[in-house]
Amino acid sequence: MRFIDTHCHFDFPPFVDDATGSIALAAQSGVERIIVPSVDASRFERVSQLAQQHDALYAALGLHPINIAEHNDAHLGDLERWLQTPDTKRVAIGEIGLDLYMNDAQFGKQTRLLDAQLKLAKQYDLPVILHSRRTHDQLAMHLRRHNLPRRGVVHGFAGSQQQAERFIQLGYAIGVGGTITYERASKTRNTIANLPLASLLLETDAPDMPLQGFQGQPNRPERARNVFDVLCQIRSEPPEIIADALWHNSLSLFALPA
Image 1 (cartoon, rainbow, N blue to C red):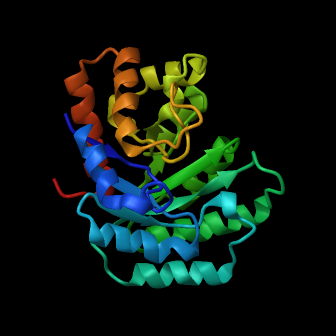
Image 2 (tube, one colour):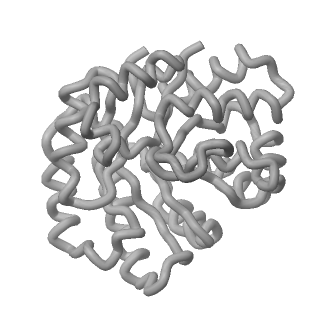
């Protein structure tokens, strides 16, 4: 079985210090491809370079809401300039979205930057990689308004089944990550167990979101296999069917070469 980690911040330590070794380690667990979303304009070049230098890596460019204090309109201009240059290894706009969990959320600025990036996604015909904490309903409203042709994925989903189904009805995939490895996360586990398999993607959010049993350690892309193993425990389909669906869902959404 082979896997795609659809969300790994590979431009951060510990991976960036040993990219070749980290890619090889992931491959040993069947993780053959890794999508690397950026978090701010200062990382666009690094993420793009990593994707060009390594066959296994693909880039996404975007302004993460967690860094809202750092973003400005000039960074939106930077993003559009990068998008104007064709790049076969650039597969999405992300990580973008909304976040009401942090202090000083500057939510008005968040929504303005989100709308601008959703417009760019439509203009350049790219899917989006979406961050959402305590903002699922607001995010769904923005997605409905923009009606992107390529849609995207709500990554690291930990909301209710009703919220997940609303995103799926809008055409968006749901990112399945380390949250499901915690038995106490019963709401998320039950939700993921009952969603359509055709709407799920596999991810780690490494080096963040450590899995059960790895708390206190940087998360790693090879642990997408651990997430998969737990997914197989909570769903009814055979592992081979689940793995095949996750693989093809990822190829389809991000237009990756087969």
